[in-house]
Length: 468
Image (cartoon, rainbow, N blue to C red; front, side, top):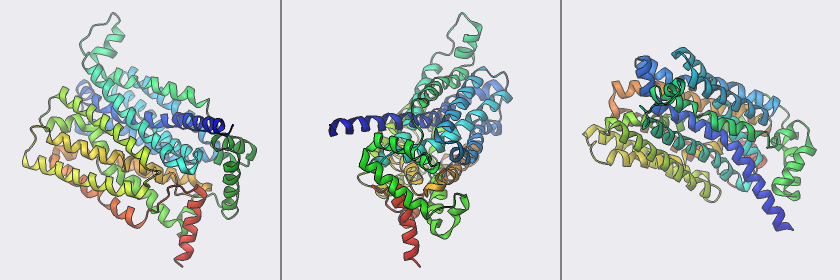
């Protein structure tokens, strides 16, 4: 009887977390699908380098706005309804981009999609971290990053497939325009499929039990917690929640700026920011262009981009299977150190003109692998854990906002850096920007594996009292 119950609970936990992780899939798909459309849109609309950067980064501006409102909305209306909103926005964006009649319309729908992705990028990992038992939380939140990387690689495959069918003839003029003459429309429009699946699946999952507890809906929360992890665990979770809440009445974001949470605030702002300025999305957005500078043809560059995406997926599994065993800090130390080394070597190879052969691609893949098992997933795990219950939504929105601001800057500045500074200095700058994350991991980030969210909250309070 006990074994069957545990099995059912585990299946339920995985299924719900996988649905929430689809928000990461949309994030990854939308981020990476642009890489195959940039040169095509640039040609069709005669874009200069600034408008090219704006086409890439306008969605990121939408993400910044989406994240800015997501914390308050998810705290007020619940995690589930805001995830549904994000799916609707993304579906409308993908459809609108496919059918847009001008560059202005295209930018408008990209902004709408950005709003949806910005919301999902915060609420999806928040929901998963609140839904998962502490012993599985690292693995479950890492599913979000895995879905993100799968979204990236599937967009590469779809882009490569569609690019190889340019020139095909269709009986319908509309289909010919979308799938042949202006194939970037099909590349962007395919986003309607995952968005539709995400939207329908969300109606089948429950609300976050911790949000329900914050709203005083203890019976509903208890039923969900029992289904996830059994009666004893549910009782302990609710008891710990009540003890934490009794000492934590303030639900305003200013709570986060108190000295007791100062380290959590710095981690929440700096770790996501540095995870983007290390250059991960420069490789994802502009990978074909970087590989072309290394001597690859366009088709082989897109093939190299698919390889990058596959390595990203495979090495994310390392984090999934180790983050709850080895801990957050070891993965960050090894991964960030390897990423910095790879970026430095890539810069040296470009500077010395060693661009023929596989070396550039090999070290780009090393950088991707190091990011995929450390910075990528562990950043989401950590920022989903370190904030107090009462303000977790608002605090995670602040942390995710930091990530998207960095993402926006990278998307906007990378074409200019590649053009004005060259590839070598671009990668050296990324290495310098990545390095401080090693110090933050060493000095600020506590090991949180196996700890409940309430226990982590108490850690900050006890640590603060001990320092005074």
